[in-house]
Length: 473
Image (tube, rainbow, N blue to C red):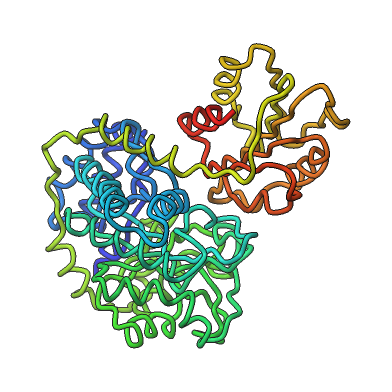
């Protein structure tokens, strides 16, 4: 039995020319497909096209495009994160999303699908169907559409319907729900402690609605969920968790693991975890560090797994890239519009003195330059100072002759874990002298800020977001 057919391998877009023979070799071995990270649009597009031509069956070309093609591929459009989009459109329409708000939402999801198809991507690992009920969640946060089952279900199902009506397979993740954790499953295995009745009302609701909507793929999270499997093994390796998804939710599509190179697989090796997943009824193993090693290990076990569902799925996939060049300029204007709409402020603020902008850069990525530049165009006397992670603060006393803005830059990203202690302590130190706090990331970072301080929620650190925030002053 050819076990490559159960594996989706990593494809580094930046290296697709240099490493093309390696990727072609995997195709000739029968690999199910690739998950694409990085690269330039035209180069990646051409490379994918050439790989598809050499494949016996349509390759699954997937990518994490929760925020659009530009999240991974240079030349594509990047949209605001899910929480920002949901917040912008809910506020625009009051209660619910109707009329123009619903039309705008569908335009966003259509733009993501159209650009993906042009690049040769036929499967998007989205929507995130997790409900972010834990403010300390270091990996879901703004990637979630919200904090309640209704909103997450609504936006998630709209994304599924729009993607799949434009030839893209949608993949809901991370079953049975990664929202109520304080641990990043890239690093280690989180535990969801809720009973099955509570899970059914909360975490499972968006997945149940996604199944009713017709989602074609669901990703199993590396999550310890005793309510589904008391043994403590990750849901991604659990026959009981897969069976619940199939039997109780009625899902008949493709089940895929989260990436096998993640710490959330627990005490198991990647190869052992892959074997356990297939034995549990999972259809696809995602992103093992070494696809050849994993396929060889599986072959040595002399197990045989049913591939009919996967074979049928691949036959129905869209392998041919769209030849119509997307309207990138229009989509970028749409992203800018949504970014501005999403920004929220609690309390007003008027500039009465000289301005001091303090930038707290938790990612040490030279963040905040656009914000500083935009504010300097309005206020010549602006003084801007940046502190990178673990750097000692030099402003510890109140700046009575200045209005003080503290801008917090801390991305939600894989393998990072929680915001640093340095960031939390720095925010506390600056609280007594700050007039306005801005979060260019998780809104929950401002939960501990006292009520009389104005708070601005920008959700992400895009250039347009920084310029839009500057326009508020």
